[in-house]
Image 1: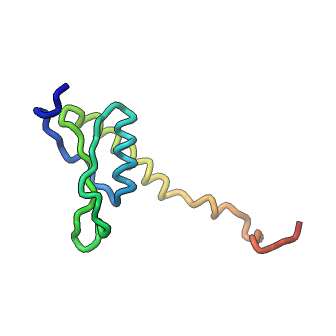
Image 2: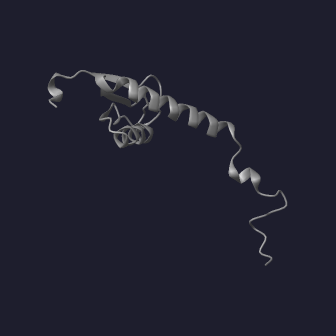
Image 3: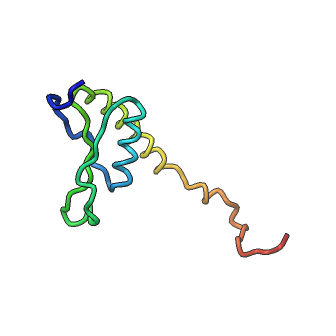
Length: 99
């Protein structure tokens, strides 16, 4: 299909370039062509400087929205759960060299 006539829309504003490219790959893995823009700013997200944006073709907008909502829900759930390091017994000390 000729993409020259297709309109792209901003699907997501990423926190940083790593997240932007992760989401691009996530979408691409589901057959949704995506592009990341504004990714070259070292100070992305600081002081009003542009953060990376993930763009998709308008025809893929709904499918991309569903995937990005799933990503957000998973990320929020992960943030709400304790870190695996918290599961280590309090008496464990990594400096303890006893066999």
